[in-house]
Image (tube, rainbow, N blue to C red; front, side, top):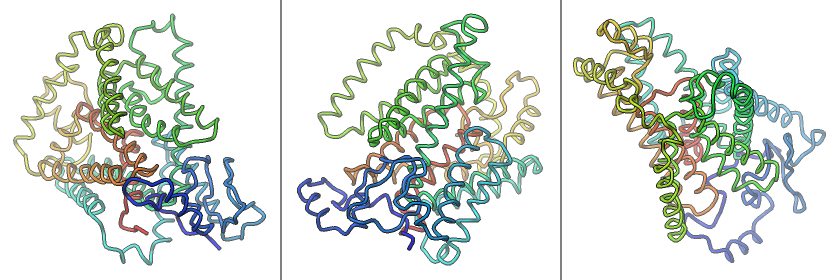
Length: 468
């Protein structure tokens, strides 16, 4: 018999407040074997128990890549089919999103996952009352689609909106699939592992050209796998808190080693790529993590230690990143002219904007300011980009959506002193980092997919429209 999906929010039965360890031990002794599964370390295995059966008293979780509590021979035909479907969707989707963020294979896997979830939930999808987060997401989607209709260049907006539909399909599928604890944590482990492979390749590329194509201390621009160094750095900033969470809650030595390598190589790449926006986002993310530290004594120690590090970094700012000292920092690499022109355009259509899409933006901007030498393909600010596309209405929907995500994560952290609360805190820190980055950038490609995955994971963790 197939085991139902496990709600990660119920990792502990000690309640949302402080956990009494003696009561916890007594409660575990009184629990049935199936109930004890909720107490297993949530990141103890690489891809554990995607669809396992009953657990006996003496069973222990396996930790292999394809590990489960039943061998392949012991599984029924239905269990094997479900296991294969989830494993293929998990591995294939993650690998193609990481290595080929614009590939047709990714689109096929995303839509396959979407229709798989739609078929599986067809009887109950509309029977449950939608919550605030799903309503906020729906409102944002409706506004985006409406902005396509009244776009000044509808054909460009339709093409860009079709890419956004793939992201929404990914959010829908992830929202439901991530309710399975093993699927969510297996996805995160594989995601970090795949990006680590990219980091290793980038470090090898950088070291092989060091001294010939570029010098130590110069900004590395031409070689990063994800193209622009700002994008590559922001991806690392977003994944750092999740990697730190998985490191803290993994008991497997090789998993811990993987996360240590990812954090070390990621910091090295952020240094050599010298993205000022991403580095500032990392500082704010670390500061928010220090403020969320519990209890108060640890929080004070974390804030004091971070303050010492920041003072030392400020005193050696020229050595760490000389780009903070050059002329382009004052004009934000000519973003000031871009933003000034954009405010003029937004003032002409402040309520509904000009329509969705980067190509629609490029056409209108260069037609309105033909003398501008700004080569940017977008507004270099998600706030201004949204205001340009859908006006005040779109900005309100965006604030509602991401504000709800932040509130859900903070509430989950405040009410839970267990791994569930820690995971909510890690996701919130990732959200803070990418939000600071978006003040001066517009996420695209793989970074946009990762940002929207935060919505899916938050919905799955905190109880979305299909909360069990």
